[in-house]
Length: 121
Image 1: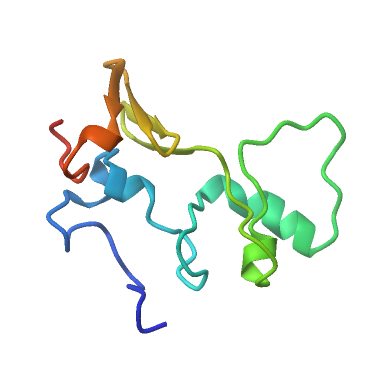
Image 2 (image 1 turned 90 degrees about the vertical axis):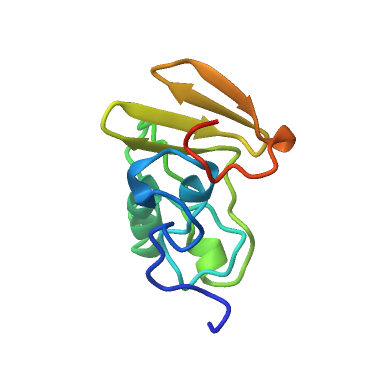
């Protein structure tokens, strides 16, 4: 646990807090007790709680979230292919390489950036 920051809001590394859809803000774990590299979002809590309580999801229900029970129990990564972030009108989706910012439609190749911590790329 010593390698983790419990209450990180992205300001310690020069960020602007959680108010911007920057790379640093989008990959902060929501559950600090799960070791990195995790990429949890609020949408993951519902399927996780359902799986934990053995409550089946309604047939045909489409969810953005995925359960993080497996990594919580140390039984796998349970990773998604993308993460999202939004505040106000600014939204972003990141797949590990590309970040699409909306409503501007700006597509950023994050591999080419020396640091994706800035909100002004």
